[in-house]
Length: 266
Ligand SMILES: NC(=O)c1ccc[n+]([C@@H]2O[C@H](COP(=O)([O-])OP(=O)(O)OC[C@H]3O[C@@H](n4cnc5c(N)ncnc54)[C@H](OP(=O)(O)O)[C@@H]3O)[C@@H](O)[C@H]2O)c1
Image 1 (cartoon, rainbow, N blue to C red):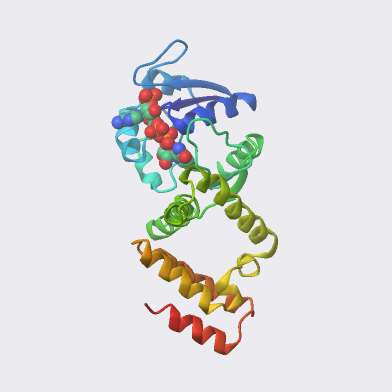
Image 2: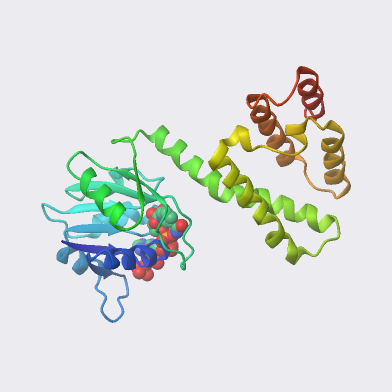
């Protein structure tokens, strides 16, 4: 079987070597092909499975330009895009790695959301395992609302954490600490919390002043933000969510919960 990978960006730079390492034959299709590469149309003609690894907004337009033939499978890797974007192809499937790829990362170890019919799902699951990925069956077909919710969850878990660390970094700088130390010192705390959550669940992992019912410390945190001229919206929103987790863990008594809630109404 031959794979065409159309669009050689961050995802393709991880996917192509992974396919080749798994023993698959791959042709790369690019708008301006280099040595050993083809134009997207020629790559499509040569292939059985055609991966459209172009930006989400260009998947549909690219699919209309390719010379599809019966028996081919079109794939995209977008968690946010309907398979309808691949409509000109005879059959379509989604293969969405749950991993941030910046050009130097590989795919191994990540989950991959697979949206495919009963004919192609087993083959895609087998391919996922051969690439070192963990297959995750998505509803097929996936309703627009479910797709948006699934993709929002993935974005919250990845870039949402970066936004949290950006606020932590700003507080670190407000404390007069060297900004260059912030990320190296704080990121291991995120790693540690995540490791604990994987072992004990989210409620079992929550720690800090909310989990302890320590209203005085929480109040000082809020004052620190105000003194630094920083917005408290994220800290307040996260504190409210942590309170839900701490309550679920059964850590707090009614008086502590009431005191924390009163502190978090601001
Ligand atoms: N990066 C990630 O972390 C990640 C993770 C999971 C899923 N994905 C999905 O993977 C797909 C590709 O994302 P990416 O991050 O690899 O994108 P990217 O780095 O921006 O690369 C996309 C490639 O598509 C081609 N391209 C750019 N503009 C185009 C246009 N207007 N029309 C047609 N082709 C164009 C270019 O390749 P050529 O110059 O070779 O033509 C470009 O390198 C998306 O569906 C994305 O949602 C990405």
